[in-house]
Image (spheres, rainbow, N blue to C red):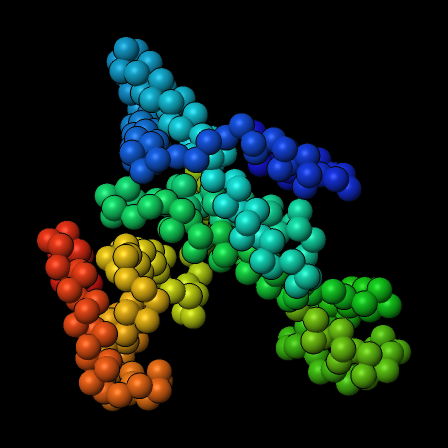
Length: 309
């Protein structure tokens, strides 16, 4: 697969080669996304049934075929959205990771988005996937910043201190104090203290968990500061439909309608407040809005706005 090649092959112009390989992959239509998502979902169900044990050879063959179809669908779904990853990754350039690494992290987010995408919600996949891609890239940047680096001169000291601590704990029947460790090892107290402050029992967030090994520890740690991906997708979808609803209005008309009705997540504003923003009278704002709403008298436009306001 194209994205696997990026993750395994080094090279100075790897990004250029990677982008060249993306060219043949067409963007998916909304119906294509639903079809592929349903095939992937069927594959997951088939795998579960196979693991539970299937006696019928015919049924087993059918399930295995469904799993193969799902794998191809997942591959196509991912490959058709790799350009989205590149476009998002470029926005994070210069923050500590090379573009190749940013794309790799983003691809992991894309894979998770494909696996967790619920086609029943009615959202366009790119809207949903953007959240996962950004989260994966941000996590990669965060891991880079939080990587624990033990100074070379402390590596042996840490080992000696930990070994001596275990021995003295058995001898004393309790944990030794830093002073006692320093005396036994003949080291400065500050050096012993520095060694004790270095974490020992660290666990990788990428450690596989679960019986199937497809999930990582980080997937089960809640990020209280992160937005819900489906809520994020809903908000983005709302903005997209709003833009479609006011299409045909000039910039001032569209802005006044949005400001007055509190669209796009803003607080509703009075004609007077809007007038002050534009340097025009309250009555003039009212006239502009009336003209704008007159353009939106078409049934389809009214229906869109009623749903959004």
